[in-house]
Length: 353
Ligand code: NAD
Ligand code: TDX
Image 1 (cartoon, rainbow, N blue to C red):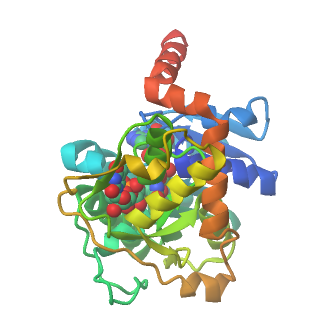
Image 2: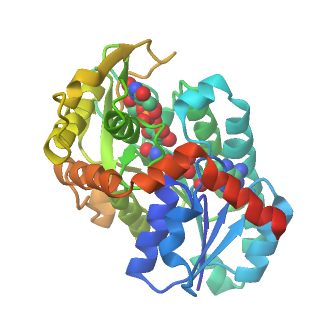
C-alpha cells in the first residue's frame, strides 16, 4: 500500500515522512508546492530511496490530485499542506484562504470521488487524515481549563480562521458523504527543519548572528510545546487506531511563556556556543505586540492517551537540546533557506523539466 502526504516538504510534513519511512516500508508519495516554506532538502536523505517519490504541485489543482490518486491508489491521504505562519496571515490573508480552505476542499472532493470508486475492503480501510492546530479553539485565560475536543471553535487570526474553516469542511464531508476522515489538533511544534520565521528557530538563528531577539508584547503569552517527531507518532497512532469522524487533540502537557522559551534557548546556546560578549539574553528586545495576539493555548491530550495509548517520547528539556544542537550542526540549511538561493535552484530545475 501507499500513503499520499501533502505538504511533506515543510517542517512537520518532512519530519513525518522521514519518521514514517524509519518505522515502516510502506511507500510515501509527497505532494508539495514548494512555497517559501517547502524545502526538498529536508527530504534529501531519501534521495534514491525507492519507497519515496516527490511531486511538485498545488493542492488546489484538482486534475493533479485525481491523477495522483488514480496512479498511486493510496490507502490514506495525510494532509499537512497549509500556509502556517500567523504573522504572514495578518499581513496577507489571501494565500491562507486559498490554500487552507480551497485546497482542503479540493482534496476532499478528489478523495471523495476516489474513495467512492474503491471496492468494499479498500473503502473501509481508506483514511483522510487532516492535520490541524489548537489555535482553532481561540485564546484561554490563565486559569481556564485546557482545550478539550468538545471546546467551541473561536479562531482569532486569519490563519486560525482558515484552519477552522478547513476543519469544518472535513467534518461535513464525513457527516454528509461518509468520507472516512479523522482530524488532529496539535499544539506548537518545534524541532529540526523549522523555518526560521517561527519563535524557536528565529531566536536560535538571530542569537547566533548577534541580532536582537524580538519578544512580542510582555512575553507572557503561553503556548504548549511538542517535539515534532512526537506529533508524527501521534498521527501514526491515529491513522492506525483512531475512530472515524473523530478529532484528537495532541499536546505535550508543556505550557511555557514565550519569555521562558527564549531564556531556555539562550541558556542552551550559552552552554553549547559561548559568546565572548556575555549571555545571549542581552539580545532580548521587547517589540510591538502581534495584533489580536492569543494569550494562552493549552491542550488536554487525555483522549488520545486514553484511546490510543499515545505518549510523547521527548520532554521539553530533551527536545529543545536536540533542536538547538541541530541548528548548530546545520548552518548551511539555515543559510540556504534564508538566502532564497535554494528556492531559485528549485525553480530552475522545474523550469528545465
Ligand atoms: P510549513 O509552513 O512548514 O509547511 C507547509 C508546507 O505546505 C510547505 O512545504 C509548503 O510548500 C506546502 N504548501 C503550502 N501551500 C501549498 C499548496 N497550495 N499546495 C501544496 N503544498 C503547499 O508548515 P508546518 O509548520 O509544517 O505545518 C504543517 C501543518 O501542520 C499545517 O497544516 C499546520 O496548520 C499544522 N500545524 C502546525 C503546527 C506548528 O506548530 N507548526 C502546529 C499544529 C498544526
Ligand atoms: O519573533 C517572534 N516573537 C514572539 O514573541 C515570533 C515569531 C513569535 N513570538 C511569539 C508569538 C507567539 O505567542 O511567540 C509565540 C509563538 O509564535 P509562532 O512561532 O509564530 O507560533 P504561533 O503563532 O503560536 O503558531 C504556531 O503554532 C500553532 C504555528 O506557526 C502554527 O502553524 C500552529 O498552528
